[in-house]
Every structure is written in structure tokens, then in C-alpha cells.
Amino acid sequence: MTLIEILVSMAVIAVLLAGLFAVSSYIETQIKIRRTQTTMNLLVAALDAYRLHQSYDTKQKFPLPVDGNDLSYNSLAVEPEAKNLLDQLNRKAMKKKDEDVRFIDGWGNEFIYQYAPGDNAPVIISAGPDQKFATTQDNIVSKGL
Image (cartoon, rainbow, N blue to C red; front, side, top):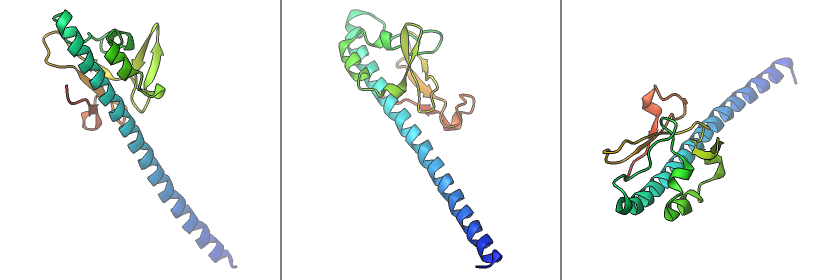
């Protein structure tokens, strides 16, 4: 083999590796998006179970945010049906904070939970792949309550 053939072979291998890296990065991002959507779907189901039970006992349909805009495991788990749903969550979707557990997206960031008494339903927001809430075009927002 000549030096030129070796260099051409190395260039082809480098191009193939770059393509492989790009594809694996895309797949990893898609997995994190799906994990985030699955976590949100379970949280929405748990919030719905909470609402069905709590609406008989109080005028407050959903738990209020803690620490500004967090959704707390303990605030939802008071309702047994909601607790059963939360227990189905992958442990990677939870982070211990103080004496409670908070929910995180596929990138390890806490969700924003927005709800105030009088609102029709809460909203759960993930910052998405860029991990910035300010850039809303890639934010993942809950649906369905």
C-alpha cells in the first residue's frame, strides 16, 4: 500500500465515524425526549387521579407548586391512586431534594410546574434538548388534563 491509499482509507474511516457520531447523538436526544414525554404522561395521570379524589374533599383541584414552581412527590402521593402511578416512574425521572422528591426530565433538569387556584389545569414544562426555558421552540409541554 502506498501512503496515499493509507491516507484515503483513514479519511473514509473518519467520515464514517463522524456520521456514526451524528446518528448516535440524534438517537440519544430522541430517547431523552421520549423519556421526558413518558414522565409527563405519568405525572398528568397522577395529577388527574389527585384531582378526582381531592375535588370531593376541597375546592383545590390540584396540588400547589412548592419552592416557586416545583411539583413535589409528597404533595401528589397523599392520594393512593396517584402514588401508585408515581411508583411506576423510572427512578431516573426523580431527584431527591431536601425531604422530598422532585421530578426531572431526560436531561436531569427539574420540570416547571405551573398551577394557581382558579386555573383550569396545571401545566408541566421541560426545557427540552437545549435545556433553556427561555427558548420555547424546543420546550416540551404537558397536554391532556
